[in-house]
Length: 265
Ligand SMILES: Nc1ncnc2c1ncn2[C@@H]1O[C@H](COP(=O)(O)OP(=O)(O)O)[C@@H](O)[C@H]1O
Ligand SMILES: [Mg+2]
Image (cartoon, rainbow, N blue to C red; front, side, top):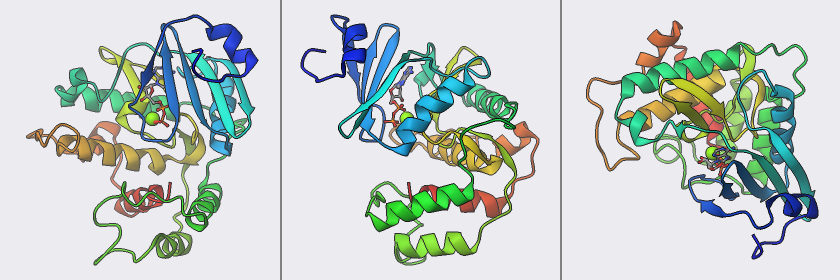
């Protein structure tokens, strides 16, 4: 890691160890994979702090990386954590077995909802999310290249600011639970048919349980429609199958709401 400047408390742990850079994530973070550790370097932010805070709080509750060191220096945040074993749910093994994929995402959501939130220090409820969304809109941080095709334009919203206003005026009542906040396949790990860990925890905390159901639904939809594998369709598989597995009646208003909210992050 000699080519990259690192704070001393991290350097002394990783010095001389072999690593590979990982380019899977969609954010501007840099991720370096060591044999049994991962170093994530990202812009210092409330989200980066939250990732370290919630991992520490969750210790022994549900499987998440253990934090070996976390610090900020200049405008960057450095998080050295344990490496979760298993494969991401976007791996071929699961992509070619949609039934198993559905079983595992259901298991993952149920694990999250089993967490007692009474002393959870991380709040990602709607008031907090809308304030952050407002900050993103004001500072031009909305990535318009990474949105659902129908969100903006002809039959959609004219701008992120208009979407934000709509979200503020149409707040649903929240059904609070422990939430991942960015529930998509590359942020979940499994081994065979068991969840082995959750990663990318910047948005984790108390939120409406439909926050995760909505992004899980969107992720399954994209995958079953072949968005990430050159258009290969999963015939006979639909994202709606998730509701039956979970035993919940789809709340289409909330699904739409939380998918729209995520466009501003
Ligand atoms: N603790 C970890 N264990 C295993 N893989 C990890 C870990 N942290 C990150 N990764 C890998 O790096 C990728 C990007 O990290 P992530 O925290 O999801 O950042 P981003 O915000 O860029 O999505 C993940 O999809 C995963 O492949
Ligand atoms: Mg990620």
